[in-house]
Amino acid sequence: MTNIVAKFRDEAKLVSALTMLKNNKVNLVDVYGPYATHDILKKVTRESRMPYASVLYGIFAIVFIFGFMYYTSVIDYPLSYGGKPIFSFPPMVIVIFLFTILLTTILTVLTFHARANIFPGKPLKNPDPAITDDTFALVIGQNYNPEEIKEWLKESGADEITEKEIQ
Image (cartoon, rainbow, N blue to C red; front, side):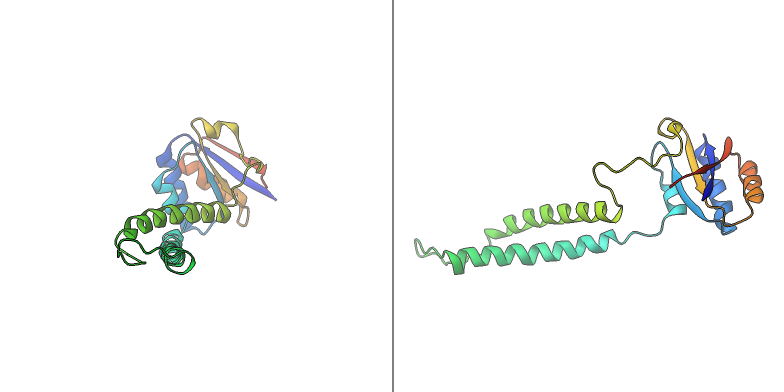
């Protein structure tokens, strides 16, 4: 399927084009750019559920680490020395805190990579090499009248409009 690719050098013009296309319910495939901007992300994406996953991973990490420390110090290898209790919780708070941060971070990064389908050796999906330098590209599916979409993009200030096959 052929897509319309519009190139913009100015970020403000791209944001205005995105607003116009979203208002007209045009199928936006993707936006490529040399850097990430919050205005573009707000227009294109929906709210992420990653923070909720991170909270669940943090709760899982606390329970897992506490259970592991309890198992090793009380059940598997209890040591009684100097009249101290077998399981003393206060010294373990710092260890639980640090390992919770570590496990939450690792699990969140792995979830992000799995959800975004990012892996080593993934083929590059870049409609134009100039995008990595100073150009933004807006890829639009042709579920609408292509000539009208091109006219809207020209009105918004697109520098170049082409039709390309992008997987």
